Image (tube, rainbow, N blue to C red; front, side, top):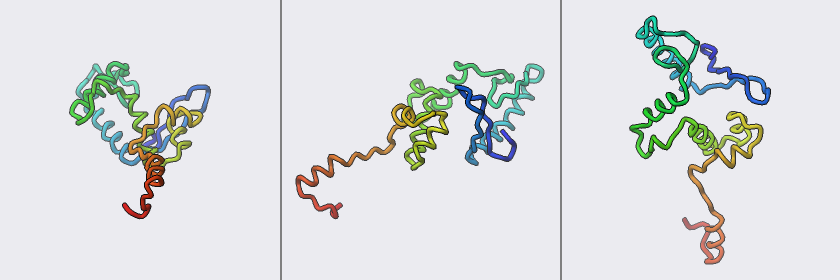
Length: 154
């Protein structure tokens, strides 16, 4: 992360594509800076046990987190969320949420696909995007035509 810029550099991408820069929302930048400050306290608490690896997210002693630890921490964070069974969620679900939320707010599918690293829109649309507020009007429109409903009447 480039301090103050709101940009995050990515690692090399699959298929030899170039690393990308991603602009982060201001709220994400704030949270990452807070995390960085908190991590400073973790470094102090760990003392000589801390191993510096330059990681943004690390164990209590600075080491790389494995998938099991990330999943455990993620589920712990969801533990008190209403309407969510934390045991059924993994961090990967956030990709689906990200795609669905952007789509619901009107972001073009092509842009969303690029943001999640897809080369086309098919996987983004068919696998990741879930309609948050689905509105299927075809049946209602046909039935209104059959019964002669007034289109001006609510």
